[in-house]
Amino acid sequence: GQSLEQPSEVTAVEGAIVQINCTYQTSGFYGLSWYQQHDGGAPTFLSYNALDGLEETGRFSSFLSRSDSYGYLLLQELQMKDSASYFCAVSLLSGAGSYQLTFGKGTKLSVIP
Amino acid sequence: ETGVTQTPRHLVMGMTNKKSLKCEQHLGHNAMYWYKQSAKKPLELMFVYSLEERVENNSVPSRFSPECPNSSHLFLHLHTLQPEDSALYLCASSRSRGGESGELFFGEGSRLTVL
Image (cartoon, rainbow over all chains, first blue to last red; front, side, top):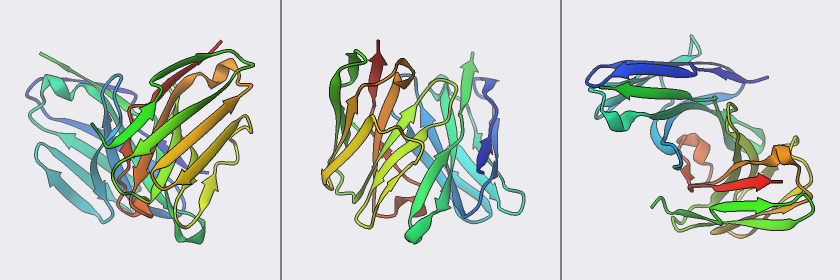
């Protein structure tokens, strides 16, 4: 089977740095994505890693280690508006050469003053 | 505005009703998806339509029936639902084989309550 594990909740202080980890057990792994979802809103794409290493996009960075089946999302200079749920998702190669995204349960991040 | 529009945003229905959820994407994408989001659970992929294939999750009950008349529109027909089907139903779109880039564009969802 396939599984993704990420913490259910994280609390951090405004201005600080927080790391949200994601471990996965899958077959046909192609890449790891991260999404943000505010309460009542649509999930929005943040980043994608297909190769090992760190990808940086502004205050957000994402890391992947394929050998460890592990990745993380790093949020720097936290702001109150970063309070949201964050989902990791794996791209899996399925039949006929198509790809599907399978999501984790999400991590609820609370940023406190 | 995400480029993916879902209607209705909220729906309450009885177990014997028949209703439909609608999704429209304005992004020129070639693949569309239905996901189910329940509390404390991962987003569950229900159906995928793309130029290449229609993929179903075999665990989806037959009381959910998708329809994709063209690459811009997607429907989810609902009939004789159960209370445990109450959830947020999310539509998403991507460029063909969007899993390669890991990027889906989601609508804001249709909140379904089954009484």
